[in-house]
Length: 327
Image (cartoon, rainbow, N blue to C red; front, side, top):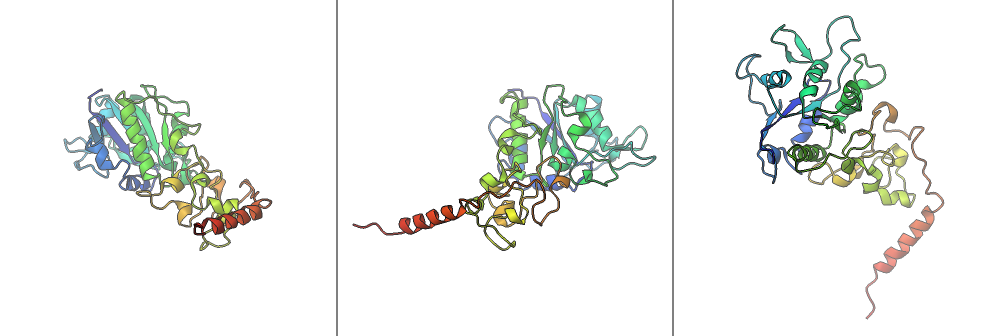
């Protein structure tokens, strides 16, 4: 195993709410402590440079500058490193003056370094690039129609076919926010891959880890059996299927209903919230309006013909299975 220290540079200078940083603090499979402290077998030594855990607070150019790690990486003095991008990438060329977002200042000019400039400086030198959250992956909320920033995801900025110098494609872990354990598990996989202990990470057509996003919300939903028997909620206090309330779970690929939110507990439809498609490219525009009847494109409810039969058979089975055995 390669025992070189692997640096993780976490950049949250794009357009974001820091939701992914907050989410990672809730991860348990593995936890952020497991990753940083090397508690899991086979992990390479890690140095995490993350605003949430960084103790450096000096000005640019000082030995205690947090951003000095990013400057070193941009100069080619930090090897190897994994670049994690949180937040969408605004278009800095769509206006006459000013900038949309920055992450520290350039020591040479004293001017802010924009998120897009950081990505352009760091991505060519990175071992791999991870876009965390739907904003970084696909543009998210900031890419909605009418937003003046021209925001886009990292794959749109670098190119969907982009590869790192080590041959890794961009890895997207979407969600609004991303699921804590999906993010931690993806980072863990990449650490093992970079250290030579795992094959190339399997990604789907949207650059998501395939094993995490290959199934739909519906397939793991606690309410799925109600769909089979045609029992649909007409308000958000009901325990039956939420598809007629606007739930997109039948077409959205996400494992939150199966995995839960924290320690296996929760999951949007399991606790009464409809799926709004936050792990999908095109969110939120393609999945609006929320909290209303499904818009055009939602899969039709096709259980009307066999639902009464399913309900009858289930009722019969429950009555028979509930009887005490005759001796």
